[in-house]
Structures are given as C-alpha cells and as structure tokens.
Amino acid sequence: MRFYRFFLLACLAPFIFAPISSAQALDKIRLATNWRAQAEHGGFYQAMVDGTYAQYGLDVTILQGGPQQNAELLLAAGRVDFALGANLFQMFEAVRQKTPIVKVASIFQIDPVVLLSHPQAGLDKFEDLPNATAFIASDFMVSAWRWLKQAHGFRDEKIKPYGFNPAPFLADKQSIQQGFLTSEPFAIEQMGGF
Image 1 (spheres, rainbow, N blue to C red):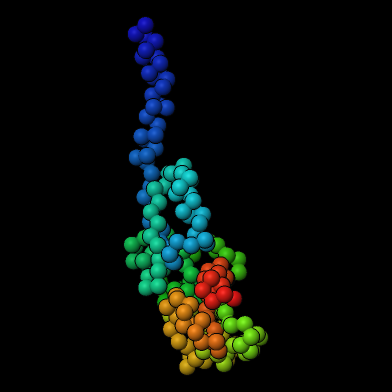
Image 2: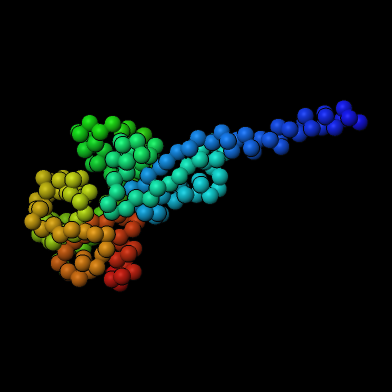
C-alpha cells in the first residue's frame, strides 16, 4: 500500500508542481507602447489576458506611452526591453543619430498617418493642403513633415502645435490636422459630426 502511494505521488508530482516551476521560470519583459492603450495595441493586451505570454515563458509588463514619452529613447536607455515605434521615419532618425536600437518588426505594411481636413472647406485635393494651417505634433515634424515640405511645399510657418485634442482643428475650418487612420477620424466624427 505504501509503495502505491509513493508511486502515485511520483506520477502526479510533475503535474502538481509544474505550474509553480513554470511560474518561476517566466522571463520578465517590459514593453513600451508609443501611445495610450488603443485598438492598434489590442493584440499585446490580449496576449496578457489570455495567457499567451505566460504560455511562452514571458511575464510582460506594458508601459503605456503618451504625448510626452518617447518609447525609442526608453529602449535605448535600457528602461524597457521592447518598444513600439510610431513610424519608420523615427527609426531612420534613430539610425542617423546612431541610437543603439534594432527594429525587429513592422506592424503596419503601410503607415496609417493621415492629414484631415474639413468638408466643404476647399481642401479636397492634396495640392490644396500646403496652404492650410496645420495642427502637427512634434514627432510628426521630425518625420513625415520633413518629406511633406521637401516634396510638396508644406511650410513651417503654417504649423500650430497639435496637443492630441481635435478641438483647435474643429474650430478652424481652414485647417488640417495630422492623425492616425484608426484614431483621429473617429474622434473627429464623434466631436465634430463629420
């Protein structure tokens, strides 16, 4: 009888103690996002909730970004292990400045950055946009804005700071605003009705 108890315990031990050992073996990872939680980041949060990270031996902490945070600099400084970048222009700038980071994936195959204008404001064609007041954030100025100036005649004197609030854009019918295809159009539709 004693032998059977020992045998049963020996057979069950790997199953009884497996969760404990696998929980202790999780590698801690810090991931910085390029913005607050949003639809584009859904898969990263879902993997936390459904246990995918743990299944692969990872204990992931997600640090949300925001308007005054730079995920790439947090990565270069060693404060996080992985970072979501906003766009490829920022990666080019990091390479130019010899920032010690490596890009490992591209989530979007096409950059979802957009320029938004008001309906019936005479800003229906791309060639009309350089003459409009442009609500642009600082990260956009060091990325896509440089290309817009060089290739399409956009001018710095037309820039007004974009603080990630569409209210100034909504108040100025002759303006344009930078946006992310999956975020700002929805917010403007909700606030501005178009």
